[in-house]
Length: 455
Ligand SMILES: NC(=O)c1ccc[n+]([C@@H]2O[C@H](COP(=O)([O-])OP(=O)(O)OC[C@H]3O[C@@H](n4cnc5c(N)ncnc54)[C@H](OP(=O)(O)O)[C@@H]3O)[C@@H](O)[C@H]2O)c1
Image (cartoon, rainbow, N blue to C red; front, side):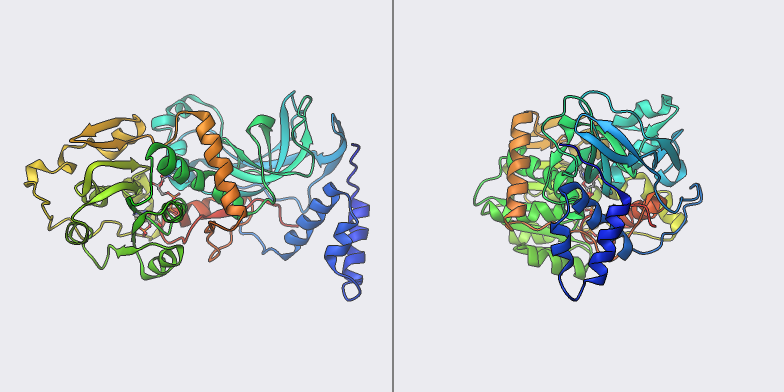
């Protein structure tokens, strides 16, 4: 199919829609456009509604509009940008903000199997981005690189297709994975793009935060009806999916949160027992109210919360150690710099409830530190309990099935994608602010950045 997106025609359509607003709906006008033009039309509308951007200190000045050029591709002639902006790092450093810089590059020519995707929303995965920026653990090789991309997850619109890509179409909404999503456009392998109905912040939340929870609980953790499942940071990006998936599976869900506002959200999502760890002692609640203990813990906070959870695992129980954010580098550096602080530790530290074991016999006292468990992807067996440092399914077919099922449930309304709408972040200039906001621990659900250039 030959697709030509003409700016003039688009403007004309927009003007007609505006002028005719009372006579017929914008939707009807949009329905007269070709699919690719309709998508662009919708983006223009959204762009027009969005707020002005702040400037990142390292950024180059944003041109007022993207210079589009006609390019021939396998799919026909499309208009793609002559250049676009993205965030990159040219060295490792202490934090994401330390290393991130905006660069404008010429749009590369697509190779066979590649697609050009206009990123609409990029997902913020603050922990992962911090380690990437620091060149630590799985990202150690970044220390040797002159340049590396930033941003692990995005959703956008296919803008152009390379040779041999026959399963995608220009104008189609897809999620992308890989380290380049903090960009206006990204070149991705066609195989790695996952078609979705619309390029929304919710879709990007499902694609990684949701999938982490589904892969961990359903595949690795073998969650089943009747299990008692504990989820930490339960109002967070991945925890909120964990709560819902466990409820859907017919489990009893215990959720820990750090504020009354988060408790209210988690209640809406269906959690049965909510523990605000600033108000209640997690270990005490577990030992008093759950004498049969916990079958599965989906745990991403670490520290004393991890200890309390591990010491209350039932025989045969599984710890799915997804992270340890209370001990990530921002808790030692950026919090004191930017004035935010998260009292992430539950109040169970002082008084531990023994559950029949003496202090020395506690399982938590015999565990490796969380970073070892996770980054070395250890699987440990202790007295019939299994502790997984890598929560991702190893079988790609099972992972794919979990993803398909997750999106099906999302689109059928069985699960919600919780996206933080209390703060809006726009463009490459505001990604650092979005990362800091996520790391502040104040977000309710997934933090996303609208990557479209403000006109
Ligand atoms: N392994 C993977 O593939 C993978 C994928 C996604 C996420 N993760 C991990 O899962 C965990 C949750 O990530 P997420 O992206 O879903 O984030 P999130 O839950 O949306 O946000 C983090 C939450 O952690 C809690 N928290 C406790 N102490 C904190 C501290 N010192 N700083 C910041 N937050 C703190 C806060 O919730 P409360 O106030 O309710 O405690 C906060 O809202 C992280 O450890 C992350 O690295 C791992």
